[in-house]
Image (cartoon, rainbow, N blue to C red; front, side, top):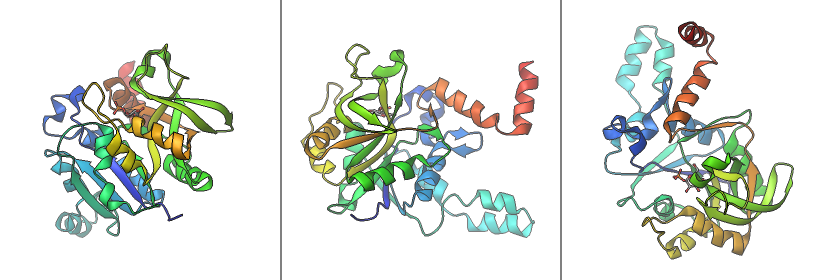
Length: 285
Ligand code: G1P
């Protein structure tokens, strides 16, 4: 099997839960303290061996491309002033990492976004999908872990975690026979079921390693009642044909697509900085 070197970042979403902030700022550029969500996601990918980043964008998201552009003049200015740490902060992406931006065209859902990457993935090549608004703090790189399992099992591999019953209807949810450690073969997958219909409390989170065959299945997937093509529906086909495995996330995930998740992620990261933590404690009294 080819090495897994390409990752797709669907970043075309409208970020309605963060309006008016997201009128002009893509939600993926909202920062956790000083670093945008998309940069955390890209750093995770690059550390996991990804060398081509494929961003599926919408018309208003030029700022994401700008964020990863080098700024040689400002960088040189900081270096001349001896401000090396500031200069380093401008290095948002190693120059050797390839970036591709593809417009989604129409907002027709996650499956439709992923489908836009089809021409860049070769036959029998597996690729990663990362949803930047799932912010993850983990002892081991979550994507590396998925890639390892996908390569060992030679099949599509997704990341899951247990989700509270009152939030399960916001996730893709899997059913499995049994777990072997952190790994399970998926026997059922359903997009956003009600708590009563959910086959388990394991929700899919935004890290996937997928086979090229997925694209054909996405093209055949019918739109759901919201006129969206769901990745989960195509994954169900892949599960039946080739098998699908799930890996339990070891680490903490914050759903930064929601306001509470975003605020908690910021607090969590802030509390790891002794200086910020002290100030927060003082101001909370
Ligand atoms: C998407 C997927 C869903 C998955 C979730 C993870 O939903 O459709 O299956 O559980 O991401 O964050 P969205 O958050 O885009 O509604």
